[in-house]
Image (tube, rainbow, N blue to C red):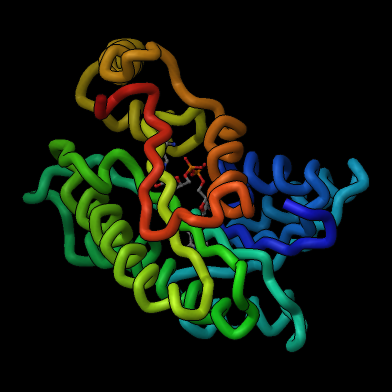
Length: 249
Ligand SMILES: NC(=O)c1ccc[n+]([C@@H]2O[C@H](COP(=O)([O-])OP(=O)(O)OC[C@H]3O[C@@H](n4cnc5c(N)ncnc54)[C@H](O)[C@@H]3O)[C@@H](O)[C@H]2O)c1
């Protein structure tokens, strides 16, 4: 990517989004960090402390008004965005019997509807050469037991990206998905804690499902995200890039 470019990243207060914000900023990209967690401000401060350009705006991506207000605050009317990365997500390890409608709706609202709301809000600022990225998951393509709502949301995200890639191709705007396996983040650790076996056993099983035998770091996901949002991938749209340590090989 060239300098002076601007990318909006959601879920930037933690994990993959935080890692992505730091990585993009190190490469001279101005980053707009959106998250419902005020800890996003500390990430913006950290980036600015390193000489980068970052602004944090509080935003619940599942709330239409909150998304609209965040864009109104963070993105001045004539801004041209290089891209938008819808990354905010939630996961719950839960059997279907124990999944309440509130929980189901909450997962879909953040992981899928959130991407819709953020993308729609970003569209006026995107032009030929811009890029939209969604954080999917290996769960975009493969089922996992006790993860039905999460898998439904991440599978839906992949089809949303494919449909949107066709819709926006005439405008020269690309839409892609990054699909990580297990990444070393608070979400991953919470997921392992929720398993019905001791934490160490859950982690060992998770790592053994990944042929590379370890977690990805947030930076490794950020590197692939950066590729998908840069001109280096200028003929790639509607694609899902697995960053899964061989999980689905
Ligand atoms: N960690 C993994 O192993 C893994 C694997 C595959 C995909 N993913 C996906 O990567 C993305 C980032 O996950 P992570 O592991 O960094 O998790 P994380 O919990 O560390 O970070 C997620 C961030 O999203 C924010 N967020 C959640 N709901 C939000 C909402 N409604 N509005 C605004 N912000 C909201 C949280 O506050 C948090 O800062 C998610 O979409 C997740 O599904 C993670």
